[in-house]
Each structure stands twice: as C-alpha cells, then as structure tokens.
Image (cartoon, rainbow, N blue to C red; front, side, top):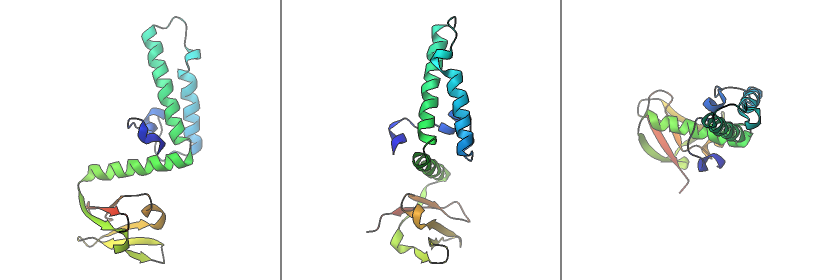
Length: 148
C-alpha cells in the first residue's frame, strides 16, 4: 500500500474533509488548498518561517490527494483507518480462520456467531482485505487469519 511508507496521518483532516465526502468534494477541497499554499502564491514579504510552513503544508496536501484522489489507495486507506479504529476499541478476542466461518449464499458473506449472541460478518470481497471484524452487537473483535 502506497500510504504505509508515509507516517500515519489523517489525510481527510489535512484536506479539511469528512471521510464520507464524495470524490468531487475531496477534489474541490484539494484544489482550493493547493492554490492557497502553493509556494508561487506566497507574498514576497512573508517571513522565511511562514514560507517554510506553507511549503510543508503544500506537500502534505499533495500527499493527501495522492492517497485520497485515487480510488484504490483511498479504499486501502479507509480499510486501514477502520482497522485502526477497531484496534482502539479493544483487544482482539479470538483469531479465526475464514474457512471456520459459515458462508451465506443469500448475502454473499461469511459469518460467525459471537458469544454474546451477535454475529461477526464479512463479505467475500472484504474478507480478502480486512483482518479485523467486529461483532454487530457487542464490542468484541476477531482477527481473520488466512486459510490454513
């Protein structure tokens, strides 16, 4: 993933956007900010420290757009954010092999009963990328392991 090489940052907040923002909204915010902080747009009488800060901000905005402006890297970044959020919720309760989960033809998803009575569910597509799945009822989390 392209964004893993860069220190973890909240690329949405750098663009001043909500994670649910549409691609056109993200692009609009990017274009507005990139013009605002572009080094060529800075006044000649601005102190050197301010110019350096604008350049740093310009580079950050550009990095954010490189990740969020591409559908594939945005999807990967969103999945990583979701996984990080789950890790913050609490410890992993169990490790489960995908093959140990039940397959539902109706909704094309894998599921596993939680000890609380709820379910861990993950679609076939998500199962290829997601490693943590939360219960739909309680705060327990399971880690999906690749098939043995």
